[in-house]
Image 1 (cartoon, rainbow, N blue to C red):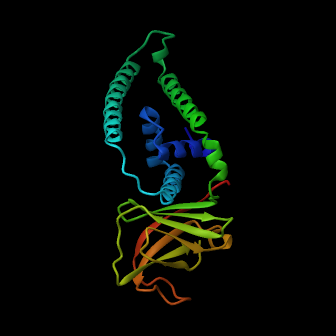
Image 2 (cartoon, one colour):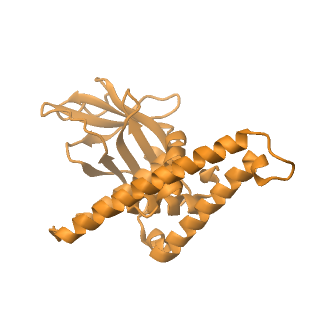
Image 3 (cartoon, rainbow, N blue to C red):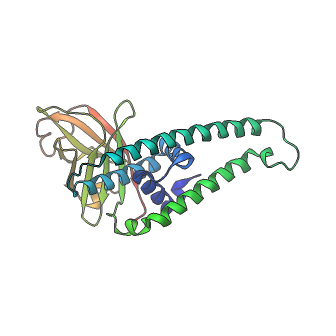
Length: 254
């Protein structure tokens, strides 16, 4: 399923995934799509970032021992359910590979996949109704552009979003990279056919905001982060150090 063709459903799935309410086969299918499609992966990271920022407003609370027992029970139940689903999926796949009588529902692998997708969609819709995620979508910060910057091993290392209402870039580190105390990371826009343009020098905080206008990111296909001397390169200069993160900048429909 091409989730990018259904932006509202993509947002709801990404929100449910971040909340942990998207479970079982539906969760695994969403994660598989996220590995294959950059926009899906970006939506998942955006919602993880939003929910993570909400926890900063809460005072630390030590949970009761019964809570940990309940969590362990849920995890064990999830593991058992996953094992059952894997066995069922393997059995269905084997049955689908064998010749079936005319008219049998397993004679069509496409039909089997369609039934699986329909079940996943029904699960998602039930979750959405229960949590009223539509209200959260309305009140969530605007995101017009999003980029997942990866290292040379293709591991996601930084999430970058642009909020047109606040006119700022929001950056959140999602990896373990550390530039050290004598170096600085610098964010660059890489316009087609043009020289790299600095968007700002980054400190070592896990999340930060940089003032920016839409013209800074409009029609910019790629963002990159380089490792520079402390404080970054002088204004008007191009990058001097190596690229440590890089990724496509995707424009979203608000």
